[in-house]
Structures are given as C-alpha cells and as structure tokens.
Image 1 (cartoon, each protein chain N blue to C red):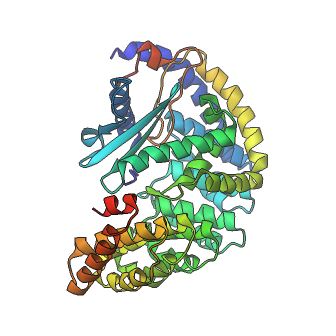
Image 2 (cartoon, chains in turn brown, red; image 1 turned 135 degrees about the vertical axis):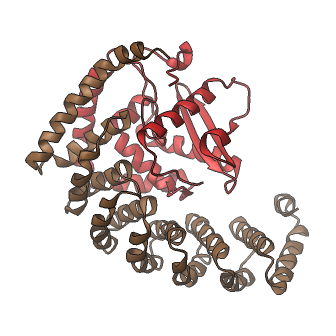
Image 3 (tube, rainbow over the protein chains, first blue to last red; image 1 turned 90 degrees about the horizontal axis):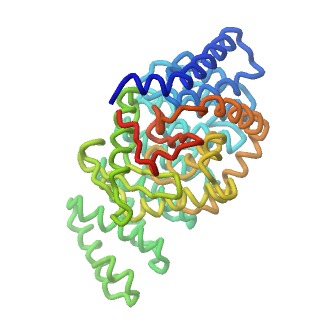
Length: 260
Length: 183
C-alpha cells in the first residue's frame, strides 16, 4: 500500500477533523456548558472517523452528572464509545451511575443500566450490584430485561456476587414478556455455569412450567441442556430425561424435531 | 456473543481492514457466514448481510445460534427502516446517535436484549421524545461537517469502532469499483 497516496487522499479530511478538534478543545477549556452536549456529540463523530479524542473523557463525566436527559444521553453514549473498562476515570462515574439507577425517570435508569452493562469494571460491579438486584424486581419489562443482562455482566466480572441474583433470576422465568424470558434464561444459564446450587431453583421452575407455548418449551429445552451439561445430580438428570420424553412424544413436528 | 472492549485504535484499524478484505472477497451466491478465527480469536464467526450499498456485520461465538444472528441483523435493519423511513447510509451518518439508541435496545453488553422490532421502536420513540432538542441541531451540524470532509476523501470504514458503520464517499462506491483501502 502506497503511503503517499493515502496521505494525499486523506489530508483534507484529516485537516477538517483537526480544525474541529481544536475548536472543541477550546470550548472544553472555556467550560461552555450550553453547547457541551453538542460538542461531545461532534467529538464522538470524530472518534468514529478515527482521530484521538481522549481530551473529551472528563467532559463526558460532567455531562453524565448534569440533570437534562439530552445531556445525560450524550454523556453516556460518550462513556460507552470513548472509554473502555480499563480506564481509571471509570471510577469517577460510579456515583453518577448510582444516582441514575435510582432515578424516577425509567429511561434514565435504562441509560445507566446500558452503560453499566457495556462497560462495567470489577470495582463498579461490587459497588452497584445491590442497585441492579433491586431493579431486577422492578415491574417494567424494559428495565427488567436490561437489569437481567446487566447482572450477567456483573457476575462475569465478580463471580462471588452470583448468590444475590439467584432468586430474582428464578422469578424472571415466570414472566410472560418474551424479552424478559430471553434475558432471564440467559441469566439463569450463566448462573448455572458458575454455581451448581443454582440448579435447585431451576428444578422448581422446570416442574412448574406450562409447556403449551413455544416460549415455555424453549426454556424447558435450555433447562434440559443445562442439566445435561452439568451432569451433577442424578435426580435432575431423571427430571431432564422425563421432560425430553414428553416432548419427543409431542405431536408438534417442530418441538419433536428440535428435541430430537 | 462476546463483546470486544478495550481495543486500541491501531488494533481496531487492522481488525476492520481484515473484516473488509473478507467481505470484499465474498461472491454473491455464497453463504453469509464466515469463520473469523484468524481475526477475532478461536471459535468466532461473523455473519454479514448486504443491503444495497451497506454491509452489516455481526461477530459472534458458539454461544449464539447462527440463524438467530442472521435474523437479528434483519431485526436491526427493519427497525432502522421504520425509524428513518427508507433508511440509507446518509441517515446513519447524520443520525449516528439515534442509530446507537436503536442498537443499544437490541444488543446489550454482547448479549441479545430484544428481538421484536415493534418493541424496540416503542422504546426508541420514547427516548427520542426525551432528547428531541439535541438530535435536530446535531444533524444540521453533521451535514455541514460531512460535506466538507467528504469532498475528495475516499476511505471507507476509516478507523471507525468495530461496531460502527462504513463511511462512504458521495462520489464513489468502493464495493462496486473494487477499490478497497486495505491497510
């Protein structure tokens, strides 16, 4: 690849971006609050084009701490795009996240969960696990599903915290909303991988499950798969084989072929 | 799906360039799934779907069902289409913030969050109502900025994050011309 031709082609674009970066840097140092969220959005666009944007990280923190929804939105997006879990500045955002996880506006709670689920570090996981566990019992499907996936991220970072999520996770399996079920099953599967005791909750869930709808069948299928993979308790294996037998004798072609 | 985080810009460049090379070498009549072990590590695959001038690529491992991933791309594109009304690449360049809102409602921390485009649309509309003042001024700015940037710059997928889109020149479609910036 000829380096000179690429330099010529990209020089105008690079010049444009550098000028904008300089303008944004000046605005950041002047601490211009009115247009900060717009400047940060511009900075993210420039980051997508591949130019260094580390000078905007502290501004993202300030935006997250502000009260307006557009500012918070841009702040959280900037947090997810411009930073990663290895950055030390992440610790500064833990307090804002805690406040937002307790916010009355469910969309702000959703924003905070999204940021936590994408960029959680081990220390943040330890600090914020109780908040996420409380949200797992929230009655809104939007928050429920995000809290479930956030819990998966937390238990990946800190496996010791798995116990606190066991009973809320089992409760999720009884819900009818399909996305809550999907995320609930993912959480339960991951909990089982970490902790064989979690299977006791599944045993209760599996015996109470109504196998009439496909969603229930899918969950039973996942339970059976999990039980078979772990091969721990012979009583559970018998249960799994019984469920399999029921499905193989089912008249629905899809179900019997799937389980076959 | 496992999410790749913490990539340095240089590794991101090379990863995206390799993905581009793979995509450009695929013929029209082959499967949409490609083994991606050499790019993303063991036991990973990528699935792509080609819509007019845009390629959507998802990378996943063995914990996800392949056909489900293909369907997920469809859900994403259908939601984009409902949101932007006959979506094209310019919609995504000028409204990248909204595109991220949609993506964050579908994929969360590397896991599938929602598979129904109706549900995603409901959530996206509510969030957009809350952040209305931002999106209008931002798209006007990006329109002016992008025109200046794209006058004679060709690079596609130039240094974008691996979850982002490919930028295309208004005047050239590198996939049609066969010119790919393979660095």
